[in-house]
Image 1: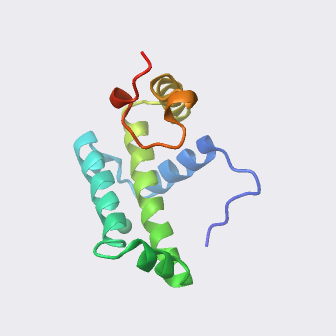
Image 2: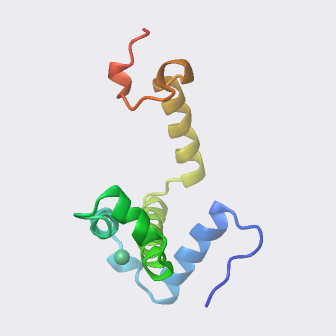
Image 3: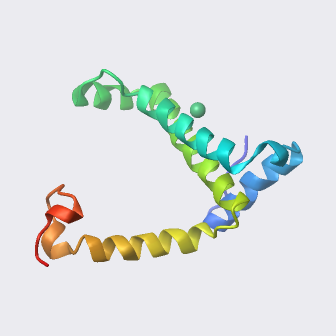
Length: 126
Ligand SMILES: [Mg+2]
C-alpha cells in the first residue's frame, strides 16, 4: 500500500494520481465530460453513505473504523477525479483553489457571515 510522505503537497498528489492514470494508459478515456461525470458519480457514492440516516446515525457510523474508511475512500475518489479533470483542462488546482477562496472571502466577509449559513446574496451589508 502506498504511504504518503511525511510532507506531501497538492502538486505531489496530483502527480501521483496522473502517474497512476498514465501507467495504465487511461488518459484516452479521461475526456472532460467523463471526468466531470466521474466526479459527480463519486460525490453521489459519498452521499449514499449518509442517505436516510439521521445526523446521530451518521456520527455513530463514523465511529466505526470500517465505515469511516469507506467514507474516506469516497472522499478520495471525488478529489482524485477532480484532480484528473483539472489536469486534463490544464487548470492549476492550487491557483484555482486560491482564487476561489479569495472570491469567497469577498462574498462572505467574516463580520457578516460568521455563525450563519445564509447565502452571500442574503447577507446584506452592501
Ligand atoms: Mg467510489
